Length: 181
Image (cartoon, rainbow, N blue to C red; front, side):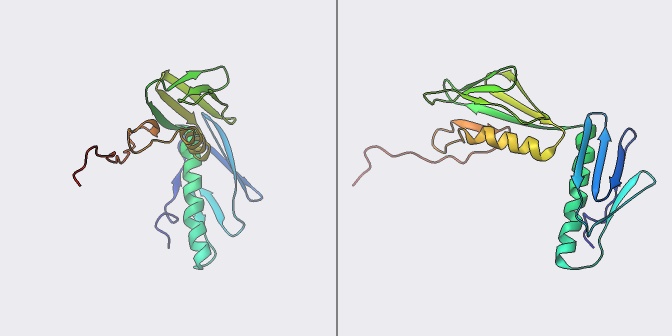
């Protein structure tokens, strides 16, 4: 058995789940999410817990078992707490300005970059060098953060660019002037 797949997903108070024809819906205080469940996986909801069962021990069924359980756990966590990714902007003159529907980034290019997030994603700028990406869908939050980071990824010589909070950027030594021949 999959160690992750066999663990039940506990459903706290305030979370409602329904499964109709292979579509699982999870509704909570922050919103609702839906997901298409693979036809081979079976969802069992009882006693405030949700379990995922697989039909056989084939390799693809074992893989789908743990994946399905993890996706459902992320949905439950999202509708209760939500997900957050924080980005830091490092560089002289690099900054983010909040707009009504998104953010404007000045990252050393000859033009500014306007970024509009998907539905369900909110962007906050507590200061000019920090961007907070929030939402209930873990995949959308991660995708939005990755898209923002891709505008100016951190470079290894000076460390300038956009990085995740707490991300370690491996630094390289530059050229050495006047090396002995």
